[in-house]
Amino acid sequence: MMEPRILEVRTKVLKKNDETAREMRQQFLDAGVLVTNLVSSPGTGKTTLLRETLMRLAADGERAAAVVGDLETDNDARRLAESGVPVRQIMTHGCCHLEADMVRDHLAGWNLADLDHLFIENVGNLVCPTSWDLGESVRVALLSVTEGEDKPLKYPGLFNTSDAAVITKIDLAEPCEFDRIQALENIQSVRPEMPVLEVSAKTGDGVDEWIRFLRTQRRRLTKPACSKN
Image 1 (cartoon, helix red, strand yellow):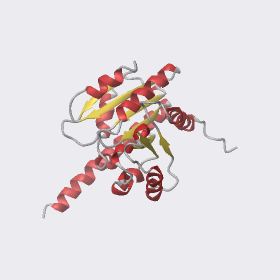
Image 2 (cartoon, rainbow, N blue to C red):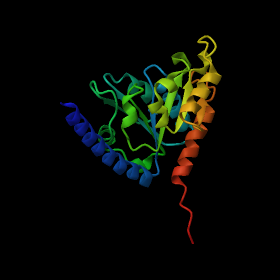
Image 3 (cartoon, rainbow, N blue to C red):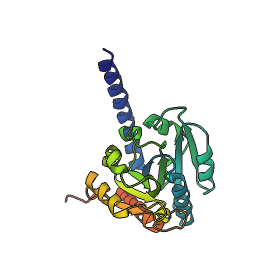
Image 4 (cartoon, rainbow, N blue to C red):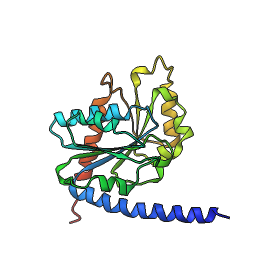
């Protein structure tokens, strides 16, 4: 008897979130900032890769910042702050995903026009974040070699709603007996032609390609529209 009511409430909540996300997306576009939403399970290496990314961008004179979602603690934010860029922690206190208003509220006081890149490190979860638009320019699904090749098949919703996939911890592929070919086939079977990058934040392998991917996305975002005349 209660299910229709639950669905109605969820629909209203998601509608409000989508409205907020649309407003944020326009603000990000007007400011010329590329917003990248990183989504994965816990332990995939999001924070380590993001820390390396922030350090490299900053070293090249690019302006970056990050907001980090976790149920509790500010451990990840403190790790990312070592990069020297602005970082804010969002503690969701039990909520398994970030929502648009959470991100909006934690951006208060930041001048978006002063940024080239804004990263959102979502709560570690392969299901809940897929339904919540955060106004991002790019959503990236991360899969580590320690998780196995079948994650795209088990969690197709994440890969279907993402713009790119990143396979992390490739330095551990051999000892983990990770089947790279099968993983790539699984990703493409769920989301054909999805860009896939392979990285190791520990060794640096593939990180240059990841940085180039981000820069390409930002150029596309800020490229002036072609004149119709």
